[in-house]
Length: 82
Image 1 (cartoon, rainbow, N blue to C red):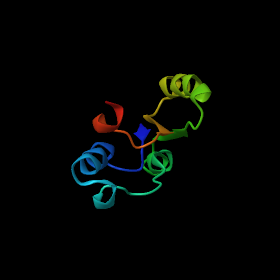
Image 2: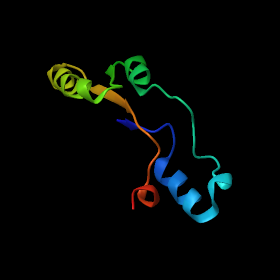
Image 3: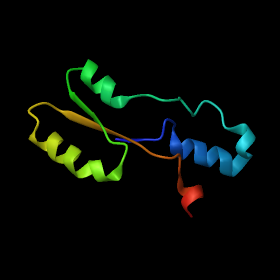
Image 4: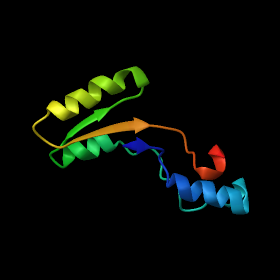
């Protein structure tokens, strides 16, 4: 899961249309989706370094339960990338 702690596309659109000062109801702080997954009976993994991603994906595929890989990223959207 690409976790930008926000509705990233919404943040990007709001910034593009209204400026940085009018971003509302779109950022939700640090949610640990790996912890949420474990609370629901799934396997939760967190990857904070790209070098850990391959091992996490392999571990997820070999797991007998659904697996969520939480990957913190920056808030970026089409307006930020273009």
